[in-house]
Image 1: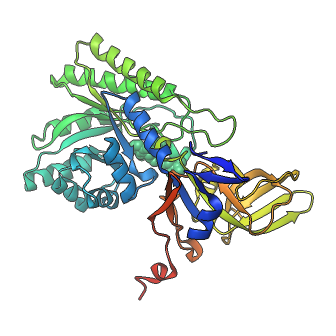
Image 2: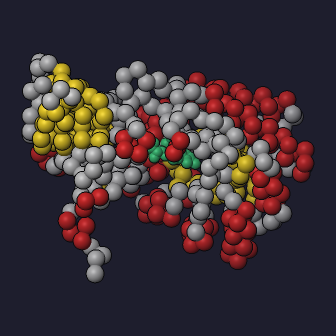
Image 3: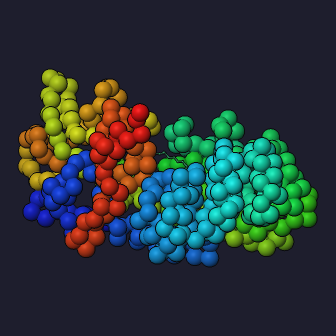
Length: 425
Ligand code: LLP
């Protein structure tokens, strides 16, 4: 739950705001984000990784206001599309603090990134190296380039969000020599400035061993590049992917320990080989915005399926949180608008969409007197819920409201029916 969440008069409050007031003023479903929580996590990262760069991974949740928070707190930003870049630039985020990612950036996206003067472009394929080389030549810009290396680490997470084993679409394989070939190709293009290597092994990873193996392999590759080409690359980007606790008993890595461990590994490999220690970057997304966000729903029906469980249907579902359907994600949920002494009943929190996979929380307990009109809250929905939201069944995407110091304000307006019909001929 967000760092400022507590109960007053039985109801959940976040940032000093009662969820009943939020529901009344802004409607449900509603994404609520605790500004102090998110900002404090940004600061915690900056402190743990002092001397390194922390680039928030915008895919987790990006909007103008979050970009302003990043700017205030001195973080950088990763974008993975022209659209994400546009959000950042729209509020004057310094382009030199932006890294551009993607396994299939379009020519237009690359050209826009060059024109904006972004800090880094992470190349992900041989075609892209050639494309970027051509565009750099045409425009006379010399971008700082990193190569995304597939380190061969088996990250222990859901298949869809593991990204460092060889049989997936991202990066250039270390084991199969593609990474070394990419280094040769980028170095052969003087209009590109090769500054470093990048690795991202996956997401929602709680065992830090994989990050350490990847860091060691990247640092070792730096040494090999020095030996083969006589070039010392000054930067390593170790990606993001650190897990958070979604349900009781979940473990989450300690950020400070992680930072110290990664730094130590890279330093040792480089110092032993007589290389200067590269500047490190990390790209956390979920750990920054995840815990500070909740989703608030209103209960519509409470259906007891005899002998099995109670199905609690709310006014949103897989359109505002697809993670359960997509990754088998687990969440914690509570009755938020009041307290109850009633017996716990085995429940399943489901949405209003036309499929039975429309589940928000597979197994949970609500008090047996749960009734239509009650508000329920789902915790840790700040990351990859709004950003993965859809309009399935023509549901408008809910608003995002930031709460702090007893005040609430909309930072992303909820969609209306007009929004849904716009653009249709
Ligand atoms: N850097 C790169 C290059 C990435 O691809 C990602 C996430 C991150 C950083 C940030 O990872 P984080 O710290 O947030 O784990 N939709 C999935 C997660 C997809 C992650 C994609 N890449 C989910 O809801 O679990």
